[in-house]
Amino acid sequence: MELYLIIALQLLALILAVIIVLRKPKSEHDELQRIKQDIELLSRSLKDETANLRADILGQNRENREELARTLKDNSDSQIKQAAETRAELAATLNSLNQQINKDALTNREELTKALNNLSESLSRKLAELTSGTTEQSDKLKKEHRRAYGTDP
Image (cartoon, rainbow, N blue to C red; front, side, top):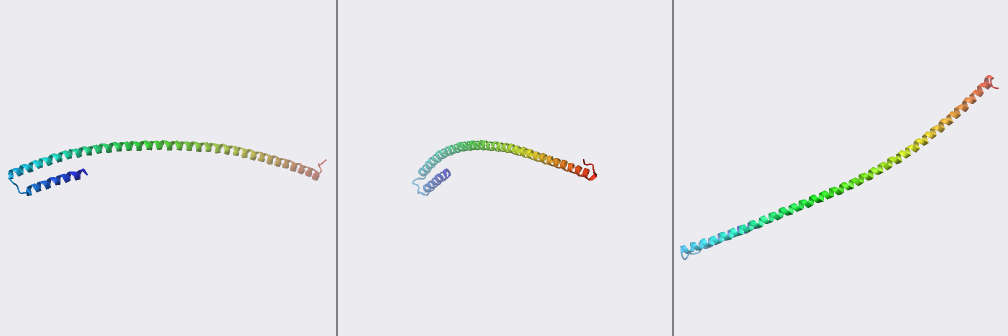
C-alpha cells in the first residue's frame, strides 16, 4: 500500500512538471523559478512521506516479529502442556495395565495351584485304587492258585 502511495506521489510530480512545461510562460526565468520551487516542494514532500512510510513499515515489522514470538511461545507452551498430559495419561494407563496383569497372573497362579492339587489328589486316588485293585487281584490269584494246586488250607 505504501508503495502505491509513493508511486502516486511521483506520478503527481511528473504530471505537475508536464503541466508546468506545457503552459505558456510569461517569462521564462519566472517560470523556471516556479518549476524549481514546485519540484523542491514535491521533493521535500516525497522525502517526508518516504520517511514516514519507512517508520510505519519498521513499526509493523517489529509488531509482526513480537506477535510471531508470542505465538511461537504460546504454541510451544501448549505443546509442552499437551505432551505432559499425554505422558501422564500413558503412565496411568500403563500402571492400570500392570496392575491388571499382576492381578490376572495371581488369579492364574491360584487357579493353576488348585488344578494341580486336584490333579495330584485325583492321581493319588487313582493310584490308591489301582494299588488296592492290584492287591485284591493278586490275593484272588494266590487263592485260586492255592486251590488249584492244593496248597489252600
